[in-house]
Image (cartoon, rainbow, N blue to C red; front, side, top):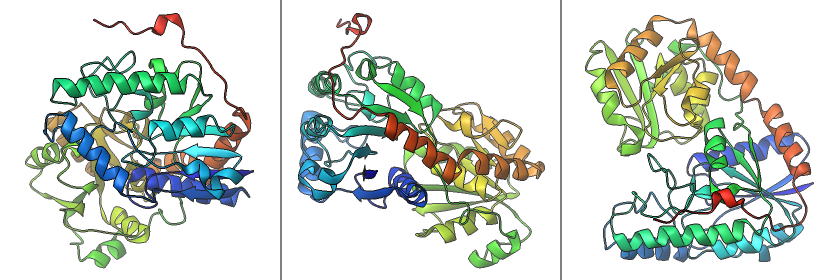
Length: 393
């Protein structure tokens, strides 16, 4: 079976990391897999400009939404023509337009789409946050500042509705949370929705002696260390300010941050695995998230995790068993969670055991191979149930 994995970036971002790990896992099972990524940059710049213009020249929401008004036609590539299965991952920021997706859906290929955020079943936003309109019509999008931009949200939703309902797509949620949310959307009606976690290479992310790991980075051997890691430390969605507030209650504990703007910038998985092993606790105070790779990586290295009760995080961290799930946006409870994890070293073994069982490469690859075989070969035209007709105020 020839499989084409499609993702905007080859290496940058959580979706790219997950897509590469899945590709390697599938190859270990004997599957023939290639990856196709964005080749042209001009659609990216034009889409950002279009969002900027539509939003009344405000930068609000500039990176939280995608209009998919322009992109590449990958159906012309040899890899696409030869593929039996087209497996979409994160395809935004000028990579695939709605027209591009329509061509893919009508190609007669088996289509599987892993949802790394909510964009596949909303109008334009990657995370709906507290909005409850995303599943019916996406009018008056709270992510956008200008009233005219809200018209784009509704227009894109209706365009997606037309395209999606003429296709036959298997949607895969990395977490049960995102799969459940997808089932609420008008856009996914008539399509199969399942939940399959991301795989991880346990030969890289594994426990190593803490003293060796700390020596590698020049970290103190005796002090308690809390690790925070994300692509951009100053990203408000990652919740660094809540961690800072929590750490005011833990003066004896040191925070080490990894990412752009942090204490370290690490660019290979081996170094990142050693950093996880060097820490006593990994904290992810993210305010919006699906299935963070960082939690799986930390647990695989034997480092218990603390995070807020949001998105797929409560599925990954089992409260008081292998980590601590704090109340949402509650810095005091986050501090209690960090102290609990520091005081209960037995959480480490439970974290390793859970990560190895759940995010096993062989297991995840087999689940995807089953979905590839189950996906229909040609598109059809499912219709949305009457109950999901949008109620426009």
